[in-house]
Image 1 (tube, one colour):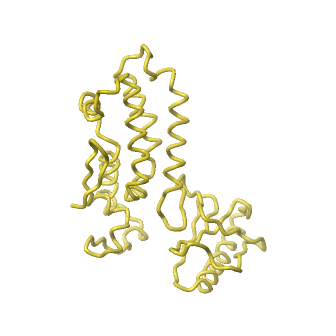
Image 2 (cartoon, one colour):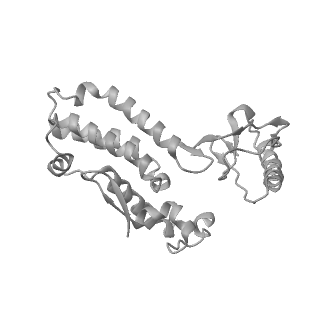
Image 3 (cartoon, rainbow, N blue to C red):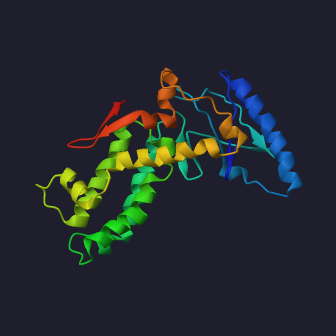
Amino acid sequence: MFADDTAIITQNKRFSVVISNLQHYISLLELWLIDWKVKVNASKTACLMFTRRPRLPVGLTPVQIFGQPVPWVHVAKYLGLFLDAKLTFAHHIVQTRKKAQAVHAVLKRFIFRRSKLAIRYKVLLYKSIIRPVMSYGSQIWGSAGMCHLKKLHTLTNSFLRQIVNAPWFVRNEVIYRDLKIKPFLPHIKDLSKRFFDKLPNVPNELISNQPAYDPAVPSSQKRPRALLDHEFINFPQAKRLRV
């Protein structure tokens, strides 16, 4: 259940147990909200079931907060990330692509092909404004399928080709080498490495109690940390290899 920036997570193979546990924790949350005089808008709260099933069971009992039902959804936005039921992050990457295109449209007069702005300043705009929008939360969704990551990879290629006004016969690899910019996929891998290297120093108990990552376990291949075990081939087309 998501309420602004508050999340309640419970796990069980039986839907009835999940709903029962979720309702119990909501009751505890209600007591805290009453003590701190915080009012919750149930219409802006959502329940999301993470499951491999193609659809939710029919007649699923809605949980309630302060007597108001909380709707079940297939995609929920939490802390800027769009979480889907199967955690493929397909919807999030589509929305990230749209957001990056919107930011690019605002800056278009500065970085379009015939702009007189120096290339180094165009690249600076890309690095400081456009790329952070595209890579936000990549420590979480960076291990998504290549069919989704390629959407951001190709969009980056398009932006850089426009910045340098490259003709069709100039390869993307040459543009990245001349601009001294890492391709998008290795870039988000570097961000993840710095993020996970800092985690052991975080005193939060929820983080320190996370189960150890073991790449030999098949289920661990879908965990965010699995991105560190990947090597990317970016040219002439984007591919991912497991180390």
